[in-house]
Image 1 (cartoon, helix red, strand yellow):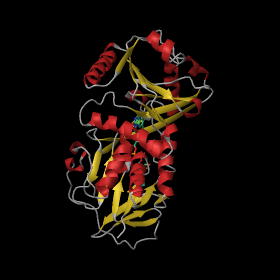
Image 2 (tube, rainbow, N blue to C red; image 1 turned 120 degrees about the horizontal axis):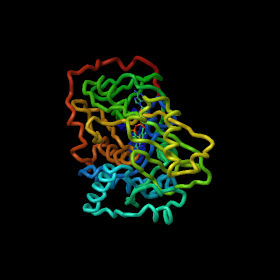
Image 3 (tube, rainbow, N blue to C red; image 1 turned 180 degrees about the horizontal axis):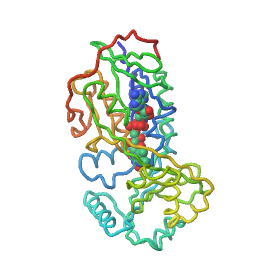
Length: 379
Ligand SMILES: Cc1cc2nc3c(=O)[nH]c(=O)nc-3n(C[C@H](O)[C@H](O)[C@H](O)COP(=O)(O)OP(=O)(O)OC[C@H]3O[C@@H](n4cnc5c(N)ncnc54)[C@H](O)[C@@H]3O)c2cc1C
């Protein structure tokens, strides 16, 4: 019998899984309540990086994932959406400078080409539109990091899967999952979907779905603020981490900014008010932002597995339900998705044991078996 996989979640992880499954001749349905692509992957800073993730096996996985995304982008004609523009980092306090120095030294010892620049040289040779007079160096530059224009990149990946004739996309909420001996049924707000396997690539929706299946896998929602401002012509080359503030070039000549700390988590004033504060802070190093005619602000949240590590594998004691969730999905989602697709198809995979679902223990089963004849077919 042909394998049919229902994927809950059409973000970067679910779409990569779908692409690699269809590439292997498998029929796939993506069901997502957010259109056109996954919500976490639509509103994201989207830097592809490994700077402060120096523990193995995560470090090597992230590095490999960046190379994989470059190759994958070429394969689906999305190379212009992956920008290996390099990153710049500097601290704005003694302790943040120390932290950056710590990671830079560790990376150097691990064989990464870490460049040390003075603020003056960065301004003269790399980023002439930044004002770095008050920045205390050194500035760390990594040339193997960058950013992905996530919406068009995922769009190309999804279109390539649709072009195989094997992918259908349903905009609906997955409400309930039944496993049976030889199939699974996903009850959605648009009707029932039947398949051989279900793959949960539901980002921060993972906890609710897995809890209902009797093995809660905790994926928290970490709130944050992002904003974009239009500055024509584009004035920035690198992704920049300046203390807690980060900013980068965005598509269409815009600049995107965000902040690491809790004071910008959406609880202290609305997203626009906070973004205007961030933009004012950013204007100290990017003066032209103060003339930006429009600032668009977004209160967003990222899925964060409880122990920070990616999650991949079959749900414990559930033969037909696969789970894939991670923090930093833009960096690792494309590679993670390819490896998960291989596993769903029964192939061996190079997924590190540290990412395995076996670290989560099943609860007493809370799911109830329901008839699969409850509603109309959705796809
Ligand atoms: C402010 C911010 C900055 C970030 N910066 C970076 C960065 O610099 N680098 C990086 O690599 N990552 C970054 N991330 C994280 C990255 O964006 C996410 O890890 C990634 O997009 C998650 O992809 P995903 O496919 O797992 O989830 P998503 O894109 O969220 O997709 C999951 C989808 O599942 C759907 N879903 C859930 N439950 C159901 C249900 N019951 N029925 C139907 N649909 C359902 C949701 O609607 C959602 O669309 C950032 C995120 C944020 C918010």
